[in-house]
Structures are given as C-alpha cells and as structure tokens.
Length: 311
Ligand SMILES: NC(=O)C1=CN([C@@H]2O[C@H](COP(=O)(O)OP(=O)(O)OC[C@H]3O[C@@H](n4cnc5c(N)ncnc54)[C@H](OP(=O)(O)O)[C@@H]3O)[C@@H](O)[C@H]2O)C=CC1
Ligand SMILES: O=C[C@H](O)[C@@H](O)[C@@H](O)[C@H](O)C(=O)O
Image (cartoon, rainbow, N blue to C red; front, top):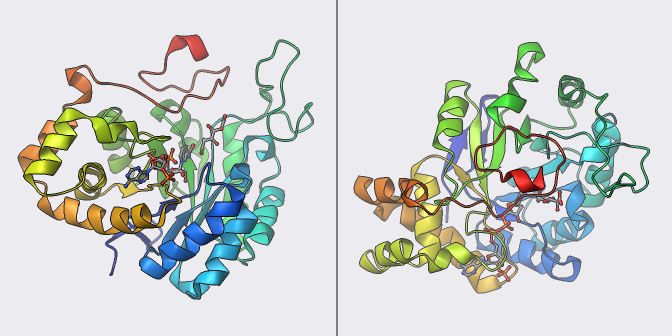
C-alpha cells in the first residue's frame, strides 16, 4: 500500500507513518524492520542512543527494499553535541548506509562529553552531567555543516519547546525541518503545534500509543470512537495524528501489530470526522493530561506539564 506523505521545508517528502525502534531489543528489531518494509512502511525512526542501529541496518538489508526508497531518520545523542559529525558517522556505519534522510538533535541538552559515562554521565550528586558551557546554537551550526557535506538530506530537532527553538532560530541559516515530540491525545501540545506551523516545521509524534504497554488503547473515549467506526483503538490514535498532518511513529516488534498500525493509521485518518477529531483534541483539557516520557534532565526544557519534581 502507498503511505501518505507530508512535505518538508527542504522540498522533500516524509512518509506520514514511520516504524519506531526505541526499546526494540537488538535480537527482535531486524525482523521487525524487515517485516515493516515488506508490508509497505517506507520510514524508520532510529537513534544512536537506542543501541540497536546495527540490527536496524540488518533488517533494512534483509527486507530487499532499495535504500533509496526508504526514509531513514536518526538522532544525535546528548554527549555528542560538540561532535555532531562523529556521532553521525557512527550511526551511518551502524546502519550500513551512506546518508540519512533526516538527522535530529535528540534532546536540547548537551551532556559532558568527558564525563564518567559515554551515554549517561552523572555528577557525584547523581544528576545528569549537563555541559552548561555549550550552546544549542553551536550544536545547530554543526548540524548545518553535516547537511552541507551531503551526509544527511534534512536536519531537525526533537524535544524542543518554543523556548529551546528560540535558542537556535535567531542564528540558524536552516530552519529545522521537523520537531519530534511526545504527541498523543493526553499530551496534544496545541500551542506548540501552532508555533511549529507558523515556522514551517513539521511535527512528528513519538509514543503515539502512550509508549510501553500502549496505555492509551484503554481510554474509554478512544475505545468508543473505535467501536462506532469499526476501527481498532490504535487506528483512532494514529488516524487522529494523520488527519492533523502530524507524522506518527508507532513502535512494535509484533508482526501483526506492525501491519495493522500501518493500515489502521491510513483508515483512521479517513474515517474520523471533524467532531471526532475535536473530541480527541479536548481529552487532555478534560482532565486526562499526561506525559509518559520524562527523563530526569536537570534543566528547564520549557514544556508545559513537565512535573517540577523531575527537573
Ligand atoms: N525523540 C524521542 O525522544 C523519542 C522518540 N521515540 C520514537 O517514537 C517511537 C514510538 O514511541 P514508543 O515510546 O516506542 O511508544 P508507542 O506509543 O509507539 O508504543 C509502543 C508500545 O505499544 C505496543 N504496541 C504497538 N502497536 C500496538 C497495537 N497495535 N496494539 C497493542 N499494542 C501495540 C508495543 O508493543 P510490542 O512492540 O511488544 O508490539 C509497545 O509496547 C519510538 O520507538 C521511537 O522511535 C519515542 C520516545 C522518545
Ligand atoms: O527516544 C527515546 C527517549 O528520548 C530516550 O532516548 C530517553 O528517554 C532516554 O532513555 C533518557 O533517559 O534520556
């Protein structure tokens, strides 16, 4: 089946549904990626920090789908903000490809590259060892350099609030193509989405099912809409994103779910009415606001609804 696409500000198009790979075990992810590509996915969301890129690359090769037909995203890990090309080169080598379609700054928080751990350096007080001397605008300059070199076709950000975007936009020569964020009915971030739209930055939704264990599938309103439209709850969650032109990144290592998420996302986007979308848009303000992904960054990320206790 052909997957709908969304235009990016660099002129290229991104498939509106991508396979997530976070927490997919190395021994499972190759088969999941190969299955997804055989079933019609053309977009895989990866990250250096997921520690499974070699296996993702294996899955891409096993699928037999040509590299040029696949949209591959990866992300710069926080201990590499001052060494963008080094992190990117490791990702390219892990995946076994010679370019990425999209490279994202994973979190707007540079961590100490010479700390006590290569991925999660900690201070003696147990907090993450943040490199306060490094500016996000410097990271972005290096992102622009790898784009100019042709190693990636587009650059973007992830987990950037308006506050963090405004730390890079005044000096940016290239506006980020996307901002990958936690977006689902319990964390719809309507104001941030309006800001992104005004800057021509495409939103991507991570944890669209509520992350591990897909808790949003149990929501009573989502279930009722699914039943009325003869859809699965996952189709409603993914269709809601598609109808709003938000890229959805559902993760699964279960073949039947991988397949149904793709078909269901497309069916859901077609079947949901304007009223259904408005109902889902309002779930968070009716008392269900919840974030599922809140790593203990010891800095203010500038997001609403980020509990103070983890900052
Ligand atoms: N930029 C960032 O900081 C972040 C990016 N991401 C990206 O977004 C992707 C998706 O987010 P993620 O947090 O993984 O969570 P998701 O919301 O995609 O949920 C994944 C969970 O849902 C289950 N699942 C998937 N499909 C179905 C289905 N149809 N029915 C029932 N259960 C289902 C999966 O189980 P199973 O696999 O066992 O089938 C898994 O437990 C990530 O994998 C990653 O690529 C995620 C978090 C942060
Ligand atoms: O993409 C997935 C997430 O961002 C994940 O990489 C982080 O939440 C990480 O585990 C952390 O603790 O900072």
